[in-house]
Image (cartoon, rainbow, N blue to C red; front, side, top):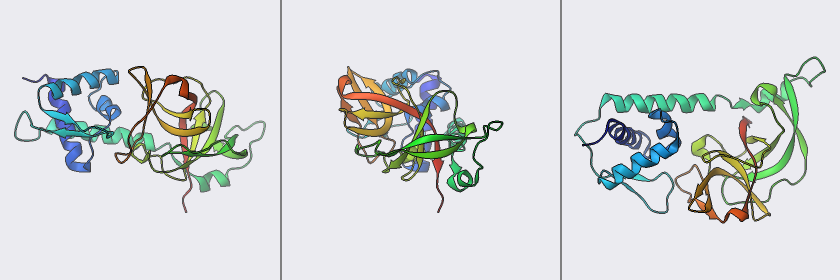
Length: 240
């Protein structure tokens, strides 16, 4: 017998596989099942795996295969969970604004802080790590996209974060920090030379940098090889 949460999770995974062809991320599972942390998702996935309901495909991110189902048909609740997760994803993407609107914004004045100017430091990889932080320009950003703290921007290169809504050519707005929690999207400086934009995980004493694209594999490093230089605070997108 499966618990209610285990039952809901396997149904949610089934619906997402049927609709998108890709299993949901752990973050999406956490949100759909209204869990407080991803550790709860890990426990549910492990329990389903031990009972022979699902299988994790090796060397692939977001790769789960359903081996059997508790019942023959999809429960309505599974579709409700999928719809709720999709709504949350759409809400998260609503923070992306057009670069045309940014260009039309008036320069800030002392009595008006609607637009902020932050440094634009070169390009950053959403794929294999590339050099970043070459040169400094200024990027005007709507103040509503930024919270407190020091921010900078990087132009995204590559497609390894497309399932997180981060596309090639986007401008990533980064909150400068040297620490981050598991599951946050960070700017990771690898071996002091190259930078990449990835989900940060800590696993068995190592740092795992996860893409958001099933075509890419996670990257593993020793803790001393990775330095967090900021975490994602928002996105700007140019429409041609």
